[in-house]
Length: 61
Image 1 (cartoon, rainbow, N blue to C red):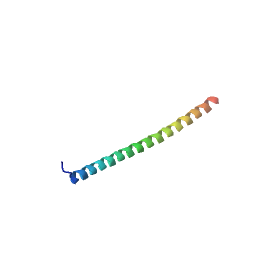
Image 2: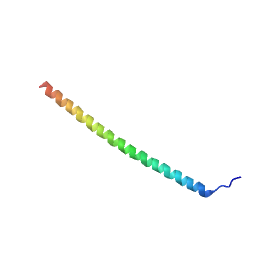
Image 3: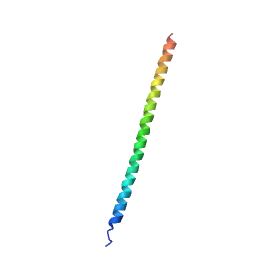
Image 4: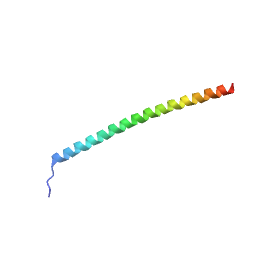
């Protein structure tokens, strides 16, 4: 029967915990970038709508 080494268990646990933390940081960074891009897209969409409305008003004159 193999011996159970508590040191290996704690090292593996620490490694997995660090891996999860790094993945969470990556996900947070991606979420922030997605939020920024979504905000930028909305801003550009509003600008486009305003430009279309302005051109419609100019065409009516």
